[in-house]
Length: 86
Image (cartoon, rainbow, N blue to C red; front, side, top):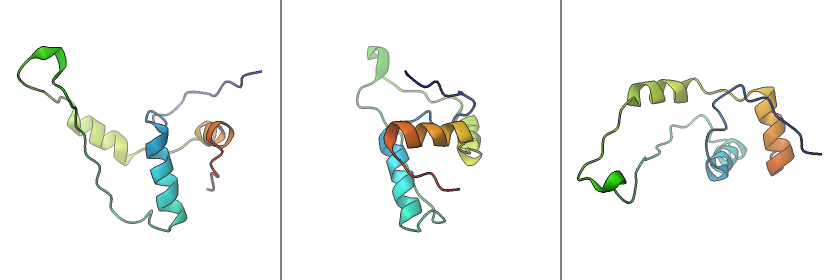
């Protein structure tokens, strides 16, 4: 039977690779260091000649306030086998 996890946070709106990077930073005691991530796309959408990013301030604020809920931790543990230590 498939377990249903409460969707009550934005923390897992990412791919498993990024979550693994966070886990590695934590395990290597690097979680207090500043990290840099880039956003890019390979091909312009809709075949036009420019790209437009809107809402970067709200995205940055969301990233600053991301917290993993108990449901998120259950999902990471059950689905990916990550050790979620608080």
